[in-house]
Image 1 (cartoon, rainbow, N blue to C red):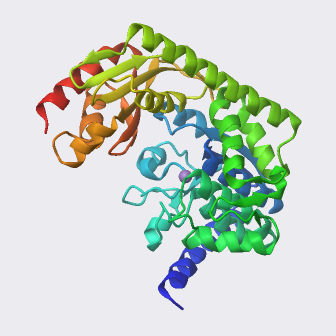
Image 2 (image 1 turned 135 degrees about the vertical axis):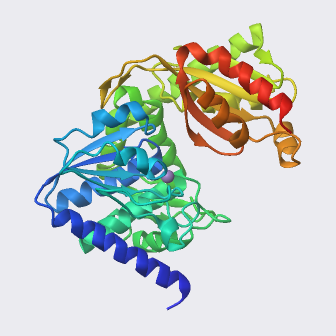
Length: 408
Ligand SMILES: [Mn+2]
């Protein structure tokens, strides 16, 4: 066996042990907590179908992020078995503190996991097996390996795993690698995906999605589950993954795409009229509740739209605020008024960062966010997201401007 095959075999063994720990448990009810993007939704659909086949009753709770305020609402004593997919690995320590006695948690994530092991909590992560979680194994692929460990009849779920990989942009030079590639072959063998002749990885037609190609299917799932999250569009997306999109899902996706276009258009017009707020190297905008009912990913996409539009007029860090709804469609109401914050950089500033002339977002964001009592949950060099108390928005901008000016 070559190295790749050995790594995959070890990963498969770990999935078998995780699946056995569930089927051996006396409890037959399971809750799936998964991300609401295409990779998370396909992972949630694969796990739902395979666990139902194994005799479990399954509750799906798609979420936009693991917010600390959600954890008490998720980990109630009545939920004995909880499986996280496509999120949770980096906050496993925080999650473990909320698991009541007699309850168990499995995390199937593909982002680099937090170090350490935690009681009542089991993690199976490709990164621990030398499999690259950015290019060789999306969360949907990990979920599919779990499903295959439950039973061979779940091979028909492989096509959804490939769709998850497309959602997470996992192709390497236009091709699927590692476990993603293995599952593509499985899906093609079964006729669940068909080549459309185009020479690119997403050039596969998905008959269940009325012969849309994988990129179109990704856009449909995104419109439903990401844009439509606060209107329960993630439920339509899960249903579409398992049975194909029905007329209601198609109409809803068109409606949500229209709402995004309308909200972004209005907000860009405001910026053209009034300009962006500025403090040193920071330009920022606050859309407050005007993106409702769009999900919280909207503000990050809008920051990118601002950069494409050229509205920053020079090289800047671009910061956007969006009102954080006080009610989650699956988990109920939360106290505390918060704002979602997204961070991006203009192309010129990105070049300065790469030359070491300016701090990247990993150096800039977490310390500023912590100082205003916020939570930096997804921080990369050139894109970041966090939540902060709503009344600390201007304090955050001031801090960011100070740090950006003094650090090089
Ligand atoms: Mn993912």
